[in-house]
View 1 (cartoon, rainbow, N blue to C red):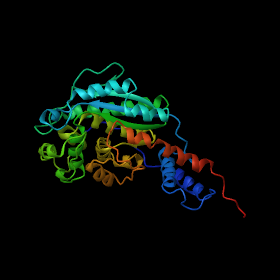
View 2: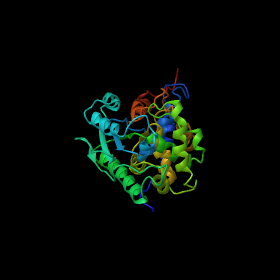
View 3: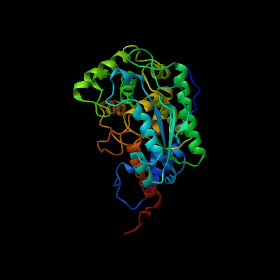
Length: 341
C-alpha cells in the first residue's frame, strides 16, 4: 500500500542564506553562540522567514496506543497503564503537562489505538483497539498502518490551522519501546539485539526475553521493506501516527521537535516515506535507550539537550522549545556589529 502523503519541500535556501548573513553582522564574535546559530538558519529554511519568527504558540500532540506484544512479556507494566496515563495527561497531572505549561504549550491527547476505552478529554481517532503481537505475526494490516499515518497528518494540520507555530510529538503506549526497537532495527539495518533497552523499567534478567521478541518480528521484514510494511509488521499505531505528524508538520513548513526513541522510530519511518523530511526535523534530546543513538545517526540529527531522559510523552522535545526561541530571538534582536571601535 502506498498511502497519500503531503509533499515536503526542500528547505528555503534564500532564507537560510539571509539568516546566515545576518549572523555575520551581529555584535558577537563569530560562532560565539555555537549550535544556536545553525539552528536559527535551519528555522529560516523550514519557515521561509529570515530572520526566523520566535516561537510563540507551541503545541504538543500525544498519541496513545497499545501493543499486543505486552501479553508476551515485553514490558514490566500492563497495558491498562496506557489508559491510566492518558487520563492523567488530560487532567494535567503528567510530566508533559508540567513542561508544556512552562511554555504555554497546548497539550492534545489522541487515542489512535488504545486497547481500553479512552478517558474523557482524549481526542478519539482510534484505528483499532491495539496491535497484535509483533513477535507472532504482523502487528497490524497495511491499511491500519496507513490509517494511523493519516491520523497524524490530520492532527498536525489541525494544530497548525489553529495557530500552532511549533509542534512537539509525544506518545503513550505500554510496550512501545519494543516496537520502536524493531522499527529502528529494520530501517537502520542493525542487529536488534544491540539496540533493545529496558524501556519503562524492565529488569536486566528480562532483557533477553525482550530481545528475543524483537528479533522474532524483525526476522520477517527485509531491510528494504516499505515504510508501511515495516509499520504493519513490527510497528505501533502511535508510531505510525507520529510519522504522519512529522510529515504533516514538514509539509506545512512548521518546525517540529522530535522526542525520544519511539518518536525517533517514527522519524525514521517518515524519512523512509519522504527523504525531504529529515532536514525539517529538530532532535530535542538524546534518550538513554540504545536504539535512540542509532536512529539519530541514521537521520544525521544532533540533539539539543542531553539530560539522560527516557520518559517519552514528548517531554524531552518540549524542553527544547526555549532553544528554538533563543536562537530566533538572538539573530533577530542582537544589535548590529559596530562599524568602528
